[in-house]
Image (spheres, rainbow, N blue to C red):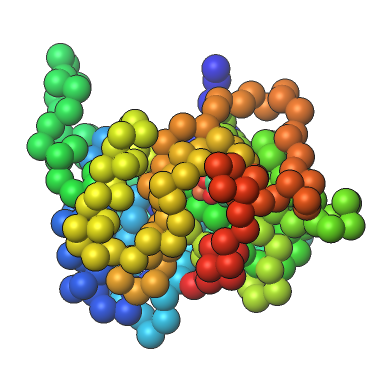
Length: 309
Ligand code: M3P
Ligand code: FE
């Protein structure tokens, strides 16, 4: 498969209330690898099996939430092409210079109608996964620290105007709609799961009146046993859990959701399936949303649906 255009979500900058407590959580409990700190005090992390310099950036702030989500595109020519396409569609972009984020090239940023800041970039230094490129071992000690997810996988964002957001992702950025939830009117799309490759989603949106909200950043585990072990590590460290372990009907992901010390929800998950762009979108009707959210319990969880940062 030729993966061109947008390749994957490459980074999220997350606001945290107390940097030291956050670094302890992301490094020692979630088990990400710290890769740098910049002059403005931001701390950079990657998951152990990611190769680019970072995927999670923490910024200390007065309120929790997400500053921006960045997608890596195939190359510089692709970045220029998307910048032109966004301009053609009347979407204002700003260009952030190379080096503004450590080890990262030029970024093209724009604001979604949902109020979220999205950026595209083509280059970030590859620091590797700690294993050699010739005859590597399957894992190393970095994969054995804390929860130790394999990669930053996707984010679920809450905000208004998700019909317009969908058009930008599908018509301009080349994503396709994998699954959706229809509202009580049987027509309006109230939640969307969009993919730019063969992941069951790279980004998801839920219609919500307040703009720019974060529901969760999600981290991939490489087995269901490791999701359960993540639950053990959360409990041992008194991390507050929202829901799970359970399985979504939507996307079929096997999952636990919990909160970082600032109240940002995160997900550790495994499973799902591998769609192609020609697959017909799966639709969940409003009456079936409880099993879409939690298949075994068939339950709408109030905290899961209402708490965002
Ligand atoms: C996911 C996922 C909802 C389901 C969310 C699903 C809002 O986050 O990773 O599949 O019901
Ligand atoms: Fe998720």
